[in-house]
Image (tube, rainbow, N blue to C red; front, side, top):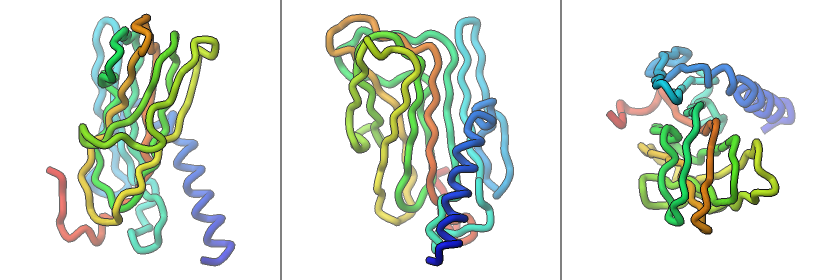
Length: 193
């Protein structure tokens, strides 16, 4: 790749990263490049939603650029005192991808515990569980990476958490964003549906 092409790829990734807050406002599930649909649920106590967008409809799997972004968000108190990992309600993504995926988890959290991402209810995504120290409670963010195989894959990523001490761990707001590659033009009609 030329230096100009590398900068363009980094610029596109940074643009996708910058639009995450806009996407967290509640869009979900495009099936065509450049389209967005809204999916959001509200209750008296909390809100949650998901989004997905083709951030680069001109790219394909052969050029290696990240061209899709998906996100899920929660707004409202969720608590656990379980010392076993359990799913963090509302923090789950279902994606169709080819190759690696980068997942960024951001939380407004109180207490000490651990956070991890599990793929397809079995594999723990690298780097594995991340410890949260109560002295550093507040807004935290972590990056997880699933290297993938390069083949078409339908995956579910779920943020899980636990309190090893059994003391209460509270999330007030959170989001999980995935950045990945999917070649809509050359998917050979493959679908997770």
